[in-house]
Image (cartoon, rainbow, N blue to C red; front, top):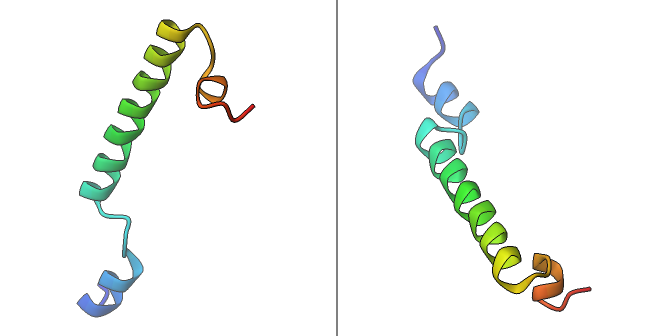
Length: 51
C-alpha cells in the first residue's frame, strides 16, 4: 500500500516493542510510587521534598 520508506518514517517511535516497554516502565514507576507512599506515609512529592 505505502512505500516502505514512507511507512517507516510515519511510524517512527511508535512501534509495538517501544509501546510495550513504555507501558512496563510506567507500571514499575506506579508500583514504586505506591511502595514509597506505603513505607514513608507521605506521597512521592513529599518524599522527594519537592513540596
